[in-house]
Length: 479
Image (tube, rainbow, N blue to C red; front, side, top):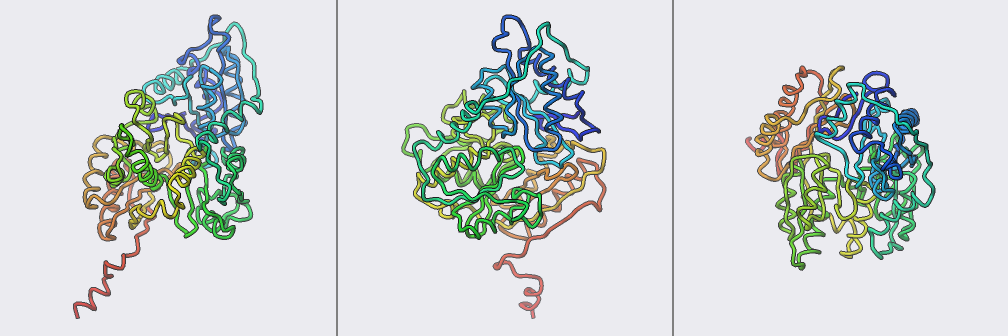
Protein backbone atom coordinates (compact mmCIF):
# COMPACT_ATOMS: atom_id res chain seq x y z
CA UNK A 1 0.00 0.00 0.00
CA UNK A 2 1.30 3.44 -0.92
CA UNK A 3 0.53 6.89 0.37
CA UNK A 4 -0.73 9.45 -2.15
CA UNK A 5 1.82 12.01 -3.29
CA UNK A 6 -0.09 14.77 -1.47
CA UNK A 7 -0.23 12.63 1.71
CA UNK A 8 -4.02 12.75 2.01
CA UNK A 9 -4.92 9.06 1.63
CA UNK A 10 -3.70 5.51 1.00
CA UNK A 11 -4.27 3.95 -2.43
CA UNK A 12 -3.20 0.78 -4.16
CA UNK A 13 -4.05 -1.80 -6.79
CA UNK A 14 -6.02 -4.68 -5.29
CA UNK A 15 -3.86 -7.80 -5.10
CA UNK A 16 -0.70 -5.93 -6.06
CA UNK A 17 0.05 -2.88 -3.93
CA UNK A 18 -2.82 -3.17 -1.44
CA UNK A 19 -4.65 -6.13 0.13
CA UNK A 20 -6.97 -6.80 3.07
CA UNK A 21 -4.09 -7.50 5.46
CA UNK A 22 -2.53 -4.10 4.78
CA UNK A 23 -5.94 -2.48 5.18
CA UNK A 24 -6.34 -4.19 8.56
CA UNK A 25 -2.93 -2.99 9.73
CA UNK A 26 -3.63 0.54 8.44
CA UNK A 27 -6.93 1.03 10.28
CA UNK A 28 -5.53 -0.54 13.45
CA UNK A 29 -2.58 1.85 13.32
CA UNK A 30 -4.87 4.81 12.62
CA UNK A 31 -7.14 3.84 15.51
CA UNK A 32 -4.16 3.69 17.87
CA UNK A 33 -2.76 7.03 16.64
CA UNK A 34 -6.11 8.82 16.98
CA UNK A 35 -6.87 7.71 20.51
CA UNK A 36 -7.25 3.96 20.56
CA UNK A 37 -8.99 1.78 23.11
CA UNK A 38 -8.98 2.36 26.83
CA UNK A 39 -11.48 1.43 29.51
CA UNK A 40 -11.92 5.10 30.43
CA UNK A 41 -13.05 5.96 26.89
CA UNK A 42 -15.03 2.78 26.21
CA UNK A 43 -18.28 4.70 25.82
CA UNK A 44 -16.82 6.83 23.01
CA UNK A 45 -14.67 4.19 21.36
CA UNK A 46 -16.69 4.36 18.14
CA UNK A 47 -15.54 4.46 14.52
CA UNK A 48 -17.69 5.49 11.55
CA UNK A 49 -17.05 3.57 8.31
CA UNK A 50 -18.42 4.31 4.84
CA UNK A 51 -17.55 3.29 1.29
CA UNK A 52 -18.08 4.29 -2.33
CA UNK A 53 -19.24 2.06 -5.19
CA UNK A 54 -15.82 0.67 -6.17
CA UNK A 55 -15.77 -3.12 -6.80
CA UNK A 56 -13.52 -3.86 -3.81
CA UNK A 57 -15.63 -1.86 -1.36
CA UNK A 58 -17.42 -4.82 0.26
CA UNK A 59 -14.21 -6.82 0.70
CA UNK A 60 -12.29 -3.84 2.11
CA UNK A 61 -15.18 -2.89 4.42
CA UNK A 62 -15.24 -6.38 5.92
CA UNK A 63 -11.50 -6.28 6.56
CA UNK A 64 -11.63 -2.78 8.05
CA UNK A 65 -14.53 -3.60 10.37
CA UNK A 66 -12.88 -6.83 11.55
CA UNK A 67 -9.63 -5.04 12.37
CA UNK A 68 -11.41 -2.26 14.24
CA UNK A 69 -13.51 -4.67 16.30
CA UNK A 70 -10.34 -6.58 17.19
CA UNK A 71 -8.83 -3.30 18.34
CA UNK A 72 -11.76 -2.70 20.70
CA UNK A 73 -13.83 -0.26 18.63
CA UNK A 74 -17.57 -0.32 18.02
CA UNK A 75 -18.02 0.21 14.27
CA UNK A 76 -20.96 2.16 12.82
CA UNK A 77 -21.31 1.17 9.17
CA UNK A 78 -22.89 3.78 6.92
CA UNK A 79 -22.83 1.78 3.70
CA UNK A 80 -22.65 3.66 0.38
CA UNK A 81 -22.07 7.32 1.22
CA UNK A 82 -19.98 10.26 -0.01
CA UNK A 83 -16.76 11.20 1.78
CA UNK A 84 -18.55 14.26 3.14
CA UNK A 85 -21.04 12.05 4.97
CA UNK A 86 -18.27 10.15 6.77
CA UNK A 87 -16.66 13.44 7.80
CA UNK A 88 -19.95 14.95 9.00
CA UNK A 89 -21.23 11.88 10.84
CA UNK A 90 -17.93 11.19 12.58
CA UNK A 91 -18.45 14.40 14.51
CA UNK A 92 -22.21 13.86 14.85
CA UNK A 93 -21.71 10.41 16.44
CA UNK A 94 -18.87 11.68 18.66
CA UNK A 95 -16.73 8.89 17.22
CA UNK A 96 -13.00 8.69 17.74
CA UNK A 97 -12.36 8.51 13.99
CA UNK A 98 -13.95 7.95 10.59
CA UNK A 99 -12.85 5.74 7.68
CA UNK A 100 -13.81 6.15 4.02
CA UNK A 101 -13.08 3.22 1.71
CA UNK A 102 -12.80 4.59 -1.79
CA UNK A 103 -11.25 4.05 -5.17
CA UNK A 104 -11.45 7.79 -5.78
CA UNK A 105 -11.69 8.54 -9.49
CA UNK A 106 -9.22 5.85 -10.49
CA UNK A 107 -9.68 2.56 -12.31
CA UNK A 108 -11.94 -0.18 -10.94
CA UNK A 109 -9.03 -2.25 -9.59
CA UNK A 110 -7.91 0.54 -7.26
CA UNK A 111 -9.00 0.95 -3.66
CA UNK A 112 -7.88 3.15 -0.80
CA UNK A 113 -8.50 4.53 2.67
CA UNK A 114 -9.13 8.02 3.99
CA UNK A 115 -9.19 8.75 7.71
CA UNK A 116 -11.01 11.50 9.61
CA UNK A 117 -10.43 12.92 13.08
CA UNK A 118 -13.17 13.12 15.69
CA UNK A 119 -14.06 16.65 14.52
CA UNK A 120 -14.43 15.54 10.89
CA UNK A 121 -11.13 16.91 9.60
CA UNK A 122 -9.26 14.62 7.23
CA UNK A 123 -6.05 13.03 8.49
CA UNK A 124 -3.22 14.20 6.24
CA UNK A 125 0.44 15.15 6.23
CA UNK A 126 2.78 14.00 8.98
CA UNK A 127 0.07 12.17 10.94
CA UNK A 128 -0.94 10.10 7.92
CA UNK A 129 2.73 9.43 7.23
CA UNK A 130 3.16 8.10 10.78
CA UNK A 131 0.17 5.79 10.25
CA UNK A 132 1.73 4.60 7.01
CA UNK A 133 5.03 3.89 8.76
CA UNK A 134 3.25 1.95 11.51
CA UNK A 135 1.37 -0.02 8.83
CA UNK A 136 4.63 -0.99 7.14
CA UNK A 137 5.87 -2.26 10.49
CA UNK A 138 2.84 -4.52 10.78
CA UNK A 139 1.40 -2.56 13.67
CA UNK A 140 -1.91 -3.94 14.87
CA UNK A 141 -3.21 -5.04 18.21
CA UNK A 142 -6.18 -6.61 19.89
CA UNK A 143 -7.97 -5.10 22.86
CA UNK A 144 -9.05 -7.05 25.93
CA UNK A 145 -12.66 -6.23 25.06
CA UNK A 146 -13.75 -6.72 21.46
CA UNK A 147 -15.93 -4.23 19.66
CA UNK A 148 -19.10 -4.82 17.67
CA UNK A 149 -20.60 -3.73 14.36
CA UNK A 150 -23.61 -1.41 14.41
CA UNK A 151 -25.45 -0.65 11.18
CA UNK A 152 -26.41 3.01 10.84
CA UNK A 153 -30.15 3.57 11.12
CA UNK A 154 -32.15 5.87 8.86
CA UNK A 155 -32.11 8.72 11.37
CA UNK A 156 -28.31 8.86 11.30
CA UNK A 157 -28.18 9.10 7.51
CA UNK A 158 -30.94 11.70 7.70
CA UNK A 159 -28.59 13.81 9.81
CA UNK A 160 -26.24 14.08 6.82
CA UNK A 161 -29.12 14.95 4.48
CA UNK A 162 -30.16 17.64 6.95
CA UNK A 163 -26.75 19.31 6.74
CA UNK A 164 -27.29 19.62 3.00
CA UNK A 165 -30.84 20.95 3.12
CA UNK A 166 -29.97 23.32 5.96
CA UNK A 167 -27.18 24.78 3.82
CA UNK A 168 -29.89 26.17 1.55
CA UNK A 169 -31.51 27.97 4.51
CA UNK A 170 -35.23 28.45 4.04
CA UNK A 171 -34.93 28.53 0.25
CA UNK A 172 -37.25 26.32 -1.77
CA UNK A 173 -36.42 25.65 -5.42
CA UNK A 174 -39.92 24.67 -6.53
CA UNK A 175 -39.62 26.00 -10.08
CA UNK A 176 -36.21 24.61 -10.99
CA UNK A 177 -35.65 21.46 -13.03
CA UNK A 178 -32.49 19.52 -12.18
CA UNK A 179 -30.88 16.70 -14.18
CA UNK A 180 -28.66 14.41 -12.11
CA UNK A 181 -26.19 11.68 -12.92
CA UNK A 182 -25.10 9.81 -9.80
CA UNK A 183 -25.33 6.15 -10.78
CA UNK A 184 -22.36 4.19 -9.53
CA UNK A 185 -21.23 7.01 -7.24
CA UNK A 186 -21.29 7.49 -3.48
CA UNK A 187 -23.78 10.36 -3.95
CA UNK A 188 -26.44 8.03 -5.38
CA UNK A 189 -28.39 7.37 -2.12
CA UNK A 190 -28.75 11.08 -1.37
CA UNK A 191 -28.79 13.26 -4.51
CA UNK A 192 -32.40 12.81 -5.71
CA UNK A 193 -33.85 12.89 -2.18
CA UNK A 194 -31.99 16.06 -1.18
CA UNK A 195 -32.97 18.00 -4.29
CA UNK A 196 -36.59 16.88 -4.02
CA UNK A 197 -36.69 17.88 -0.35
CA UNK A 198 -35.68 21.34 -1.55
CA UNK A 199 -38.69 21.35 -3.88
CA UNK A 200 -36.91 20.83 -7.21
CA UNK A 201 -38.19 18.71 -10.09
CA UNK A 202 -35.46 16.06 -10.46
CA UNK A 203 -34.67 13.80 -13.41
CA UNK A 204 -32.09 11.07 -12.74
CA UNK A 205 -30.14 9.83 -15.71
CA UNK A 206 -29.91 6.10 -16.33
CA UNK A 207 -26.26 5.88 -17.30
CA UNK A 208 -26.62 2.50 -18.97
CA UNK A 209 -29.27 3.91 -21.32
CA UNK A 210 -28.39 7.57 -21.75
CA UNK A 211 -24.60 7.37 -21.96
CA UNK A 212 -22.87 6.64 -25.25
CA UNK A 213 -20.46 4.66 -23.07
CA UNK A 214 -22.68 2.29 -21.06
CA UNK A 215 -21.55 1.90 -17.46
CA UNK A 216 -19.53 5.11 -17.53
CA UNK A 217 -20.87 7.92 -15.35
CA UNK A 218 -21.48 11.37 -16.77
CA UNK A 219 -18.72 12.67 -14.52
CA UNK A 220 -16.26 10.78 -16.71
CA UNK A 221 -18.37 11.31 -19.86
CA UNK A 222 -19.87 14.80 -19.39
CA UNK A 223 -21.28 15.03 -22.92
CA UNK A 224 -23.94 12.53 -21.81
CA UNK A 225 -25.08 14.87 -19.03
CA UNK A 226 -25.07 17.87 -21.37
CA UNK A 227 -27.32 15.96 -23.78
CA UNK A 228 -29.57 14.84 -20.92
CA UNK A 229 -30.00 18.42 -19.68
CA UNK A 230 -31.04 19.43 -23.18
CA UNK A 231 -33.39 16.45 -23.71
CA UNK A 232 -35.16 16.94 -20.35
CA UNK A 233 -35.23 20.74 -20.76
CA UNK A 234 -33.61 21.05 -17.35
CA UNK A 235 -32.32 24.31 -15.90
CA UNK A 236 -29.10 22.74 -14.61
CA UNK A 237 -27.38 19.37 -14.44
CA UNK A 238 -25.06 17.81 -11.86
CA UNK A 239 -22.64 14.87 -12.18
CA UNK A 240 -20.66 13.60 -9.19
CA UNK A 241 -17.26 11.97 -8.84
CA UNK A 242 -17.09 8.35 -7.65
CA UNK A 243 -16.38 9.33 -4.04
CA UNK A 244 -18.89 12.19 -4.13
CA UNK A 245 -16.32 14.88 -3.38
CA UNK A 246 -16.60 16.89 -6.60
CA UNK A 247 -19.44 17.80 -8.95
CA UNK A 248 -19.51 19.05 -12.51
CA UNK A 249 -22.30 21.34 -13.68
CA UNK A 250 -23.92 21.22 -17.12
CA UNK A 251 -25.68 24.32 -18.47
CA UNK A 252 -28.67 24.35 -20.86
CA UNK A 253 -26.52 26.11 -23.49
CA UNK A 254 -24.16 23.12 -23.65
CA UNK A 255 -21.36 24.51 -21.50
CA UNK A 256 -19.75 22.55 -18.68
CA UNK A 257 -18.53 24.14 -15.44
CA UNK A 258 -15.87 22.18 -13.62
CA UNK A 259 -14.68 22.96 -10.11
CA UNK A 260 -12.28 25.77 -10.93
CA UNK A 261 -14.98 27.51 -12.98
CA UNK A 262 -17.50 27.04 -10.17
CA UNK A 263 -15.02 28.70 -7.83
CA UNK A 264 -15.16 31.78 -10.04
CA UNK A 265 -18.96 31.74 -9.94
CA UNK A 266 -18.94 31.54 -6.15
CA UNK A 267 -16.34 34.29 -6.06
CA UNK A 268 -18.68 36.56 -7.99
CA UNK A 269 -21.61 35.84 -5.66
CA UNK A 270 -19.68 36.12 -2.41
CA UNK A 271 -17.81 39.20 -3.56
CA UNK A 272 -21.06 41.06 -4.18
CA UNK A 273 -23.15 39.42 -1.49
CA UNK A 274 -20.75 40.07 1.39
CA UNK A 275 -19.24 43.39 0.29
CA UNK A 276 -21.59 45.38 2.53
CA UNK A 277 -20.50 43.57 5.70
CA UNK A 278 -17.88 44.91 8.08
CA UNK A 279 -15.54 41.98 7.42
CA UNK A 280 -14.24 41.40 3.91
CA UNK A 281 -14.85 37.76 2.92
CA UNK A 282 -11.78 35.63 2.23
CA UNK A 283 -11.67 32.81 -0.31
CA UNK A 284 -8.73 30.44 0.07
CA UNK A 285 -7.22 29.25 -3.20
CA UNK A 286 -4.74 26.41 -3.68
CA UNK A 287 -1.58 27.44 -5.48
CA UNK A 288 -2.33 25.32 -8.56
CA UNK A 289 -5.78 26.81 -9.26
CA UNK A 290 -6.67 29.20 -12.04
CA UNK A 291 -4.05 31.96 -12.08
CA UNK A 292 -6.77 34.47 -12.94
CA UNK A 293 -8.99 33.35 -10.06
CA UNK A 294 -7.43 35.53 -7.33
CA UNK A 295 -7.68 38.91 -9.12
CA UNK A 296 -11.10 37.96 -10.49
CA UNK A 297 -12.50 37.33 -7.01
CA UNK A 298 -10.81 40.44 -5.65
CA UNK A 299 -12.44 42.57 -8.33
CA UNK A 300 -15.82 41.37 -7.09
CA UNK A 301 -15.17 42.56 -3.53
CA UNK A 302 -13.66 39.49 -1.86
CA UNK A 303 -10.07 38.79 -0.88
CA UNK A 304 -8.08 35.67 -1.70
CA UNK A 305 -5.47 33.80 0.26
CA UNK A 306 -3.22 31.44 -1.67
CA UNK A 307 -2.30 28.29 0.24
CA UNK A 308 0.08 25.44 -0.46
CA UNK A 309 -1.13 22.34 1.32
CA UNK A 310 -3.77 19.67 1.70
CA UNK A 311 -7.22 19.44 3.28
CA UNK A 312 -5.90 19.84 6.81
CA UNK A 313 -5.13 23.52 6.27
CA UNK A 314 -8.83 24.37 6.03
CA UNK A 315 -9.91 23.92 9.64
CA UNK A 316 -6.64 25.37 10.95
CA UNK A 317 -6.85 28.49 8.78
CA UNK A 318 -10.56 28.87 9.42
CA UNK A 319 -9.99 28.84 13.17
CA UNK A 320 -7.41 31.60 12.75
CA UNK A 321 -9.48 33.64 10.29
CA UNK A 322 -13.27 33.52 10.69
CA UNK A 323 -13.75 35.52 7.49
CA UNK A 324 -12.86 32.48 5.33
CA UNK A 325 -16.06 31.52 3.54
CA UNK A 326 -14.81 29.15 0.84
CA UNK A 327 -11.69 27.25 -0.15
CA UNK A 328 -10.55 25.46 -3.30
CA UNK A 329 -8.15 22.62 -2.60
CA UNK A 330 -5.33 21.50 -4.87
CA UNK A 331 -7.52 18.98 -6.71
CA UNK A 332 -10.25 21.59 -7.19
CA UNK A 333 -12.58 20.26 -4.55
CA UNK A 334 -14.63 23.12 -3.09
CA UNK A 335 -14.97 23.40 0.68
CA UNK A 336 -17.30 25.66 2.65
CA UNK A 337 -15.74 25.80 6.16
CA UNK A 338 -19.00 26.86 7.79
CA UNK A 339 -20.69 23.76 6.37
CA UNK A 340 -18.10 21.02 5.94
CA UNK A 341 -14.48 20.12 6.68
CA UNK A 342 -13.91 18.31 3.38
CA UNK A 343 -14.91 18.73 -0.27
CA UNK A 344 -18.48 17.52 -0.87
CA UNK A 345 -20.05 17.56 -4.32
CA UNK A 346 -23.61 17.58 -2.98
CA UNK A 347 -22.81 20.50 -0.69
CA UNK A 348 -21.31 22.36 -3.66
CA UNK A 349 -24.47 21.72 -5.70
CA UNK A 350 -26.78 22.92 -2.90
CA UNK A 351 -24.69 26.03 -2.29
CA UNK A 352 -24.74 26.82 -6.02
CA UNK A 353 -28.54 26.53 -6.12
CA UNK A 354 -28.71 28.80 -3.09
CA UNK A 355 -26.50 31.36 -4.85
CA UNK A 356 -28.74 31.29 -7.93
CA UNK A 357 -31.78 31.99 -5.75
CA UNK A 358 -30.00 34.63 -3.71
CA UNK A 359 -28.84 36.55 -6.78
CA UNK A 360 -32.07 35.95 -8.74
CA UNK A 361 -30.04 34.67 -11.69
CA UNK A 362 -29.81 31.50 -13.75
CA UNK A 363 -26.60 29.50 -13.80
CA UNK A 364 -25.94 30.87 -17.27
CA UNK A 365 -26.23 34.44 -16.02
CA UNK A 366 -24.08 33.71 -12.97
CA UNK A 367 -21.32 32.27 -15.14
CA UNK A 368 -21.51 34.88 -17.90
CA UNK A 369 -18.48 36.77 -16.56
CA UNK A 370 -16.30 33.71 -16.11
CA UNK A 371 -13.31 34.11 -18.47
CA UNK A 372 -13.64 32.00 -21.62
CA UNK A 373 -10.24 30.55 -22.39
CA UNK A 374 -8.83 28.25 -25.06
CA UNK A 375 -8.03 24.80 -23.69
CA UNK A 376 -5.42 22.27 -24.71
CA UNK A 377 -4.65 18.97 -23.00
CA UNK A 378 -1.85 16.44 -23.11
CA UNK A 379 -2.08 13.01 -21.48
CA UNK A 380 1.18 11.41 -20.35
CA UNK A 381 1.13 7.63 -19.90
CA UNK A 382 2.87 6.47 -16.71
CA UNK A 383 4.89 3.27 -17.17
CA UNK A 384 4.05 0.23 -15.06
CA UNK A 385 5.73 0.38 -11.67
CA UNK A 386 5.41 4.14 -11.19
CA UNK A 387 2.04 3.92 -9.44
CA UNK A 388 2.09 7.14 -7.41
CA UNK A 389 4.38 9.66 -9.13
CA UNK A 390 5.85 12.59 -7.29
CA UNK A 391 4.40 15.47 -9.30
CA UNK A 392 4.68 18.26 -6.77
CA UNK A 393 8.31 18.94 -5.97
CA UNK A 394 9.53 22.44 -5.19
CA UNK A 395 11.72 22.62 -8.28
CA UNK A 396 8.95 21.38 -10.59
CA UNK A 397 6.41 23.81 -9.14
CA UNK A 398 8.77 26.73 -9.64
CA UNK A 399 9.55 25.72 -13.24
CA UNK A 400 5.84 25.34 -14.05
CA UNK A 401 5.16 28.74 -12.43
CA UNK A 402 7.70 30.27 -14.83
CA UNK A 403 6.06 28.60 -17.84
CA UNK A 404 2.65 29.79 -16.65
CA UNK A 405 3.87 33.38 -16.81
CA UNK A 406 3.93 33.03 -20.61
CA UNK A 407 0.12 33.08 -20.53
CA UNK A 408 0.13 36.81 -19.71
CA UNK A 409 -1.69 36.35 -16.39
CA UNK A 410 -4.88 35.15 -18.08
CA UNK A 411 -4.42 31.39 -18.07
CA UNK A 412 -3.75 28.38 -15.92
CA UNK A 413 -1.82 25.13 -15.79
CA UNK A 414 -3.37 22.09 -14.09
CA UNK A 415 -2.28 18.47 -13.70
CA UNK A 416 -4.82 15.78 -12.88
CA UNK A 417 -4.89 11.98 -12.56
CA UNK A 418 -7.93 10.76 -14.58
CA UNK A 419 -6.65 7.18 -14.30
CA UNK A 420 -3.97 5.34 -12.37
CA UNK A 421 -1.50 5.19 -15.25
CA UNK A 422 -2.12 8.65 -16.69
CA UNK A 423 -1.31 12.26 -15.92
CA UNK A 424 -3.35 14.85 -17.77
CA UNK A 425 -1.85 18.28 -18.28
CA UNK A 426 -4.37 21.03 -18.98
CA UNK A 427 -3.39 24.50 -20.15
CA UNK A 428 -5.78 27.37 -20.82
CA UNK A 429 -5.08 30.84 -22.13
CA UNK A 430 -6.40 33.56 -24.42
CA UNK A 431 -4.13 32.75 -27.38
CA UNK A 432 -3.70 29.31 -28.98
CA UNK A 433 -0.05 29.93 -29.79
CA UNK A 434 0.78 30.65 -26.15
CA UNK A 435 -1.26 27.67 -24.95
CA UNK A 436 0.50 25.25 -27.29
CA UNK A 437 3.94 26.52 -26.31
CA UNK A 438 3.25 26.21 -22.60
CA UNK A 439 1.70 22.73 -22.75
CA UNK A 440 4.64 21.34 -24.72
CA UNK A 441 7.16 22.78 -22.26
CA UNK A 442 5.19 21.68 -19.17
CA UNK A 443 4.88 18.17 -20.62
CA UNK A 444 8.66 18.06 -21.01
CA UNK A 445 9.05 19.11 -17.36
CA UNK A 446 6.66 16.38 -16.18
CA UNK A 447 8.48 13.74 -18.22
CA UNK A 448 11.77 14.84 -16.73
CA UNK A 449 10.28 14.75 -13.22
CA UNK A 450 8.85 11.26 -13.68
CA UNK A 451 11.71 9.98 -15.85
CA UNK A 452 9.25 9.00 -18.60
CA UNK A 453 10.57 8.54 -22.16
CA UNK A 454 9.00 10.22 -25.19
CA UNK A 455 6.36 8.47 -27.28
CA UNK A 456 3.76 7.99 -24.52
CA UNK A 457 1.58 11.04 -25.03
CA UNK A 458 -1.87 11.81 -26.38
CA UNK A 459 -1.84 15.46 -27.38
CA UNK A 460 -4.80 17.62 -28.43
CA UNK A 461 -4.18 21.08 -29.80
CA UNK A 462 -6.84 23.81 -29.55
CA UNK A 463 -8.55 25.32 -32.56
CA UNK A 464 -7.19 28.83 -33.28
CA UNK A 465 -9.48 31.64 -32.17
CA UNK A 466 -11.17 33.85 -34.80
CA UNK A 467 -8.85 36.76 -34.00
CA UNK A 468 -5.79 34.57 -34.44
CA UNK A 469 -5.30 33.74 -38.17
CA UNK A 470 -4.33 30.24 -39.28
CA UNK A 471 -1.01 29.71 -41.14
CA UNK A 472 -2.96 29.48 -44.42
CA UNK A 473 -4.65 32.83 -43.77
CA UNK A 474 -1.32 34.38 -42.90
CA UNK A 475 0.12 33.18 -46.22
CA UNK A 476 -2.84 34.55 -48.15
CA UNK A 477 -2.49 37.89 -46.40
CA UNK A 478 1.21 38.00 -47.34
CA UNK A 479 0.43 37.46 -51.00
